[in-house]
Structure formats: structure tokens, C-alpha cells
Image 1 (spheres, helix red, strand yellow):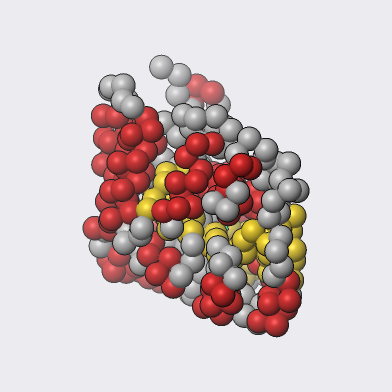
Image 2: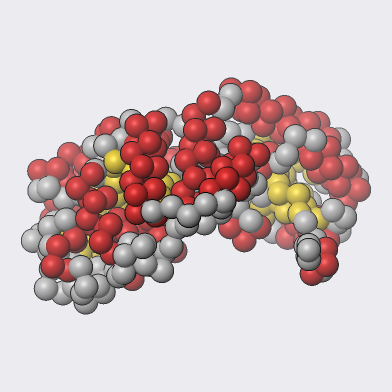
Length: 365
Ligand SMILES: *Cc1c(COP(=O)(O)O)cnc(C)c1O
């Protein structure tokens, strides 16, 4: 069997985050077992999607659940659902939906590259500077949905999710929450939908540590049921986002594991690791390390912010990030700017913090 080494691919230590470009996250043994088991027999796929969805819905206190091939696919399917649950005749029309509700309201401070998934369905963006008055004024008979991207403290819009939901509810407009990376905390699996969001989307391949090509769509049954006719194994807009029996069972195992996980112990590991990095780095000339909280994705976990003086070290933060990648083993750190990068403990396997510490001493000592 050909492995990474045979292909000239160097496995990396991930001190960056659950980023797709470095492989997202690693599947724990229970997820791998579930996928392996699922791979052993044929099943009725539509029935399996329903049963897995019902189980995940019950576990996550949601009305319904659907396993997607990732959060980005989930955004696209949720946007389609926002049209379909009112206009089932749009089924074979995507992305040509000008005859139906075809606008999605987005907030200026939350725009991000995943918005493209909304446009791909045929919806037109209506971008507003978030405030209750602007939001009310933007709603009209063409409005299909509003998409909310929780950015934690980075939110610059002058409107809260609770306000958005209250106003959208008056007009029966579904609120879609792109919560792809909003785990932990684990209770986000039900928090957004219990607040009244119609749909919340999560990556299966980030902190849930399910299959890389999986995601969760949680929320209203009518919306979720509306996309079944256009989704795998049926044909239409959702067919390219195929989810197999292995991803379905792997995603379920990942959710079961995540709900039982000792999140306090995990947070403690992150605290201890950040302290180790700070204690290692701060004595070094031209280096300042500090605990930052929450991390960039707004997850309630600490990470280590490293500020370097290029005049002393002879390297900028960007050059150091490259040096970490070139190190043996390669280490991915999270670059911020010319002078700063982050070391993120959340994607380290226990023990790897020592590899990162040793690399810090070698490259910056
Ligand atoms: C990661 C991410 C996505 C995409 O998730 P996938 O599961 O990789 O498709 C979408 N939106 C946001 C905000 C993300 O952070």
C-alpha cells in the first residue's frame, strides 16, 4: 500500500487550527471503527440518512438533523431549503430561481468566503450594515432567508442573533446560522436552534473529529425534509454533495463521542500547553508569548500569541512560520502578521506539545 511517505508527503504536527488545508482534524478510533463497520455492507442509503438524522436530532435536542458533506455544502442546502419549503416547484430550477424568493440577507461584518455557497443556489446577496432598522428595511417579499455567522467578540454589527431571530420570525423568514467552527462549546449543537434559528450548520471535520467530508444540518424538520428530493441518492442541486454510508455512521459516532467527551479535561490540556509554550518562549531574546482567549474562531479555548522582534531574531513571524513547516517533523503554526503568529493547542495530539516546544527552542532560541 502506498503511504504519505511514498508520495513524498510529510505528515505535519498541527499547531494551527482545524483548517481544511492541513487536513482539518484527526478521526478518533471510535469514528474510524464506525466507518470501517459501515463499509462492510450495503444498505438503503436514504433510510440510513433518516435514521442517523433522527438519532443525531435526539442527541442534539433538535427537531431534525441531516448529515451533509461539510458545512459549506450545508449552507448551500440550507439556502435551497429556504426557497424550497415555500416553493417546492423550484426543485428542478436551481440556480434559476428568479420566479421565487431569491434574496438572502447578510451582515456586512460577517461576510466571508463561504457565502459563495448561497450565491451558487441562485440567491442574490442583500448585504446590510447590521442594525434592527436596517434589517427590517431590507426584508421584502423576495427575501428567502437571513444568514448569520457567529463571530464571537469579532462581531462588528450592531444587532444580535436574538434580535435577528425576533424580527425574522415576524415575517416567517428562516434564520440560517453558519456555526461550522463553533464547537466547542458542545451546547452550541442546540443553543442556536433553541434560540429560534431555523437551521444551524456545523462541520463534521473540525472539532467534532468526524469524517473530513461531513457536516451537520440541525433544525426545522420541514426545511430539512424539503431538500431530500434534491439530495443524494436523489438527483438535483444536492447530488454532488454525496454523503456515503461510511460518512453517515462516522458522523453519528463523532457526535456520540463529542457529547460524552470530558471537555473540562480538554480545556485544561489547552491551558497547560499554552503555559508550557509561554514559559518556554518568554526567556528567549526578542520573543514575547502570551495566553490569548478565546481563539480566533471564538471557541472558548486559549491559544498562545507569539510576538517576535525580527531585528533580534533575524526572522519575521512569516519566515518563522515557514521554518516551522520546514522543520522535521513539519509543524503548522497559525500566522497572523509580520510580527505575530499563534500556537494552537486544540489540534495537538497529547505529547506533540513537546515537539512544538523543542522546535521553538531550536528555531527561536
Ligand atoms: C470551516 C468553515 C466552513 C466550511 O466547513 P466545511 O465543513 O469544511 O465545509 C464554513 N463556514 C465557516 C464559518 C467555517 O469556518
